[in-house]
Amino acid sequence: MKNILVPFDFSHHSRNALEYAAQLAAKADAKLCIFHAYDRSEVLEGVKVATTVSAMEDIQRKLAKQFGLSEKKITGKVVQGEFIEEVLEFIGKNKFDMIALGTRGASGLRELLVGSYTVNLMQELRDIPMLVIPEKASFASIRNILLCSDLEEIADDNALDLVKEIAMLFNADVRLAHVDKKGAGKNPTYENVLERRREIHIFEPEVDCTYKRIVSNDILSGIKYYMDKKEDNDMVAMVYREHSFIETIFGMNHTHEMAYHTTVPLLVLPEGKGQ
Image 1 (cartoon, rainbow, N blue to C red):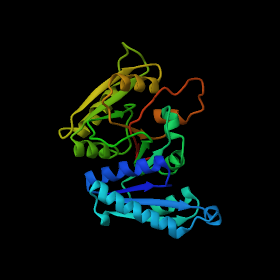
Image 2 (cartoon, one colour):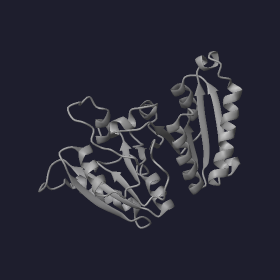
Image 3 (cartoon, rainbow, N blue to C red):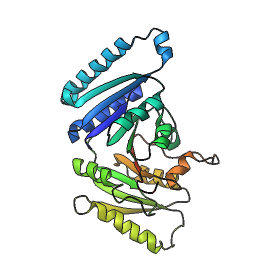
Image 4 (tube, helix red, strand yellow):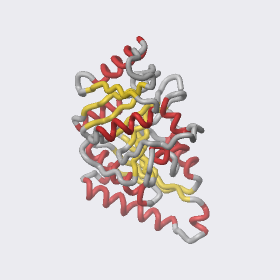
C-alpha cells in the first residue's frame, strides 16, 4: 500500500475520509493523492479555479502538519470535467493501491454504499481496492478486521493481500466470518472446507486468523448480529465479485430492510483474475 487516492469534493464526509486516509498513509508511510473535479457550472457560478487550487494546497499543508506526513508525499490534482469520467481517466494514467471514499451518514450497508460516487466507481473499477469510510468513522488503531467470506474460490490468490498488509501494519487479528444460510446441523461442502483452510492459510503465521460461522437466514442480518455481539471490529472487508453475496446489496430485493448498521470502514476487494 504505497499510493492512496482520495476523491475529494470539500464536503464534510469527504473531509473525514481524507483525514482517515491521511492517518492511514502516515502509518503505512504511503503517498496520498487528493483528486478534485469541478464542472463548468461551478465556473459559471463564480467559483474560481485558482481559489480551489489554493484551498487544496492549504489542505495538503494542514494534513502534513497535523498527521506528520511529509509534504512531498501529499499531492493534489484539480481538473475540470465530469467526476466519474475524470477520476477514471486519472486512475488509468497513474498507479494506485487503494482508493478511499467518504460517504454521508448511513443507516445501513445499502445506504453506506449507495451514495456519492461510490457505487459507480465500484462498478467501473474492478481491479483496485476501495476503502469506504462512513461520515462518523474515526481513525483508531485497528485491532480486529472482520473478513466476510462466502467460502467460494477466489480467482486471484493475491486478492486478500491488502487485508493481511493492514493487519500486519496494526498487529491486528483477522476474523474470517461466513454466514451459513443452510442452518445448524448442515455440513459444509468439501469445497467450502478447502477454501476456508486456504483463506486462513493466507494469513498464517504472521496474522492470527480465526474462523467464525454465523447461522442466519439472511447474510446481512447475520453480519449485523455478529458485529453487535462483537463490538470490537474496526474494519470490515469483503470481496466484490459477480454472483457473490456483496452483490445482493445492490439487488432489486426490497422485501426486507438492510439491517447492517455500521460506523466502521468497509474495505472492498476486487476478486482479480477472471472477472
